[in-house]
Amino acid sequence: MKAIYLCLFTFFMAIGMHAQSANGFGFKGGINYNSNGSYYESALSAAENPDGNVGYHFGVFAKFGGFIFAKPELVYTSTKSDYSDGTFKMQKIDAPLLAGVKLLEFLNVFAGPSFQYIIDSDFDNNDIRDIENDITVGLNIGVGFSLKKIGVDLRYERGFSNNEATIINDNNLNIGRLDTRPEQFIVSLSLIL
Image 1 (cartoon, rainbow, N blue to C red):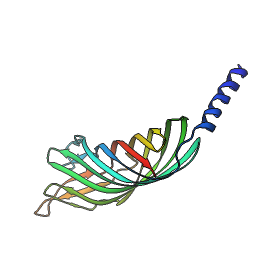
Image 2: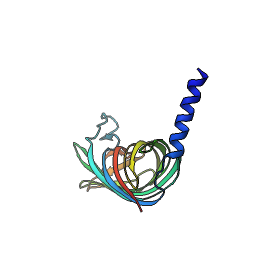
Image 3: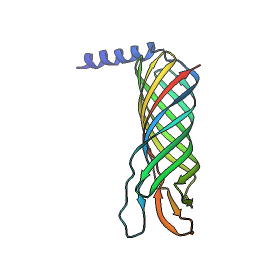
Image 4: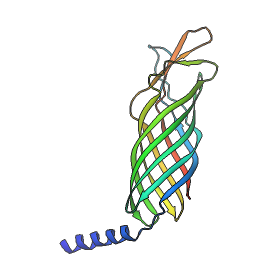
């Protein structure tokens, strides 16, 4: 049994030592299928979950390491979620700090926290007031495929805590609350320079 473990250990170490991933700085962009949190019209009403929508993102990143690597990113993200009362749109800056492991020369897995700064938000013809936190923290986890300097990532992002916003109509009446916490699947194409 020890011989099998020793062979497996040697095999994976050899893969890790020979995996030549491109390191450096690069650009990325892609689409995200997202939905934000629940929408409450009043304290007595049940929560309404959003329909997911396609958004987009683009940004820059750095990647360094070998078998174990680090990949900090700075990404502009635009999301949209449809509710029966309207559409919620949000623009934010995401800063994931990812760490990963190269499984094969072309395959890796990664995870890490993502810091998010909300730039702007809109709920159709109503005002959004009192977003609890402009800066929030979430989690990214995913898998990446790379061919030298070109890569494709598929990841899941989820905000850690509720971040409610108050929705105000034209008459300054509170018409509901919205959890702005992101939940999305992200597909990215990247290029290391």
